[in-house]
Length: 465
Image 1 (cartoon, one colour):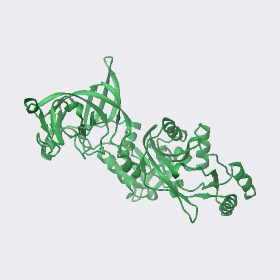
Image 2 (cartoon, rainbow, N blue to C red):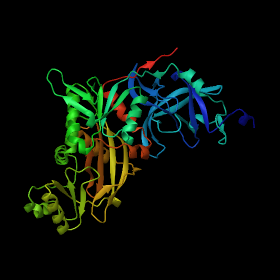
Image 3 (tube, rainbow, N blue to C red):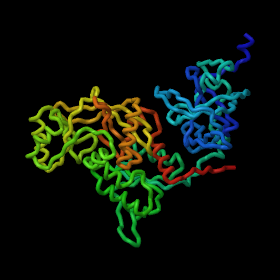
Image 4 (cartoon, rainbow, N blue to C red):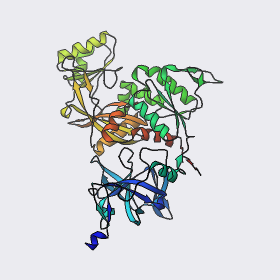
């Protein structure tokens, strides 16, 4: 009994402190089911100091508050594979640091992971609790609570300076989830982010004083960066605007050239093949006199007939037999529409995979079900998706596809065929709604971080006395 009396009784959540990291209070989920403790970290960088491996990182210690930022540095203890809350293995850096809980303090190991989307900025695992605590899951904050005024006093010195970057979001609909999230993520990181409706921008092409103006006469030449999110119907003018921003020395998340290459489906296929990226066998012909030979060339029906001007969810029709394929292709040609013909590959259960690539890394991958209309044969992708684990080959394929088209941010669509994974599409302005909901990751924040890295911008901390 004396041994039990010597242990700390904690609830299902408690306030911890890490004095050596400059973190006076951070609420942790107490989870004896998790082996390793973890803390929310971002902008993680490994470096060497005095011949030893170190890691620098930043922490948002207060939940739902990205204005408070603590910068930390610690010697690197290890790098290990840990299963995330979604069950996906992740390689994480490990540090050792003294933790204060109530009146007690001892060293624990922490893995560094982005927990922005989680309920708590920290998870306290059983390795840190062994021999020291008894958990009563029916209570919370048994060792005391912090209210908002107390947190304001503790972290008043570590508020992000709002004089960040000036970023333009070039799009058509501010109410869309992806656009709202990007604006929110930019503002939370201290940037001034402006929504720019493509239709309300106009350009002055002049050798002496080139400009981009916004309706009402506001000049946009002083922006630091632009995030182009151009819908297919606005491709021509949207790319022209992006090109004009570039000519003014303003950085863009995806360049005008990369967007144009991705939007031209035929050119995209040619560039992907040139870089050795595996895609389905494809065919295109100008004259309807060549339709039968075109169908035979790609292996015959069933076929996927794709409008070159269509979007990722529109302009794809399935033809199950030779006659249907000929009729469909010739009908499109009679309307002067250019079509691409590919074998209709029998995906596993009609599924395809969307990989989101940001600056050469696959940051998330989800699986969608392809739905074929019984009436028209039109094929579309269901908007909902589920988290999926991809192989090293699939990961490399997605990264190489984005690189081949010059895209820093891209949605790469894959299917798993009998011949291995194939790229069926690359989107330069991918929706992040389904990806964030399926993975719980702060994808909008990762895109804003990519802007910061491109401009080599570092966050300043506003010191408040």
